[in-house]
Image 1: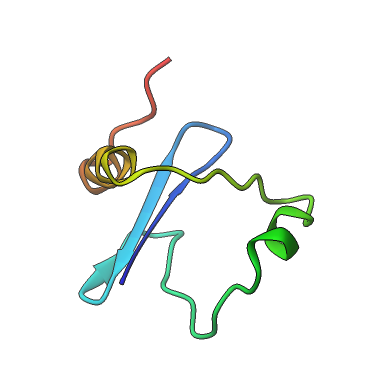
Image 2: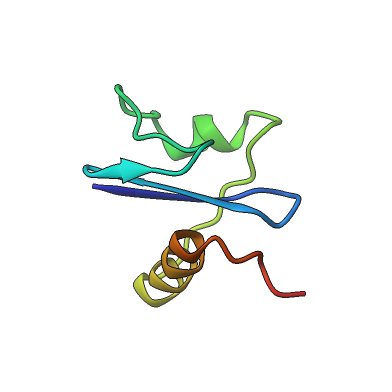
Length: 68
């Protein structure tokens, strides 16, 4: 399992079964239904494809900020 996050300030975080960045961890329990997650003000939910996930994952692992 892998998790990647893009924060509003352009920074990223990552976590997998072997390690994690400072702000991102694998959840101990499932997040729940995507609609429930999207309803929370602190989250903006985006469904992305495998290619985009891999691109964000690689950028997070390098510690590079989002372009733009």
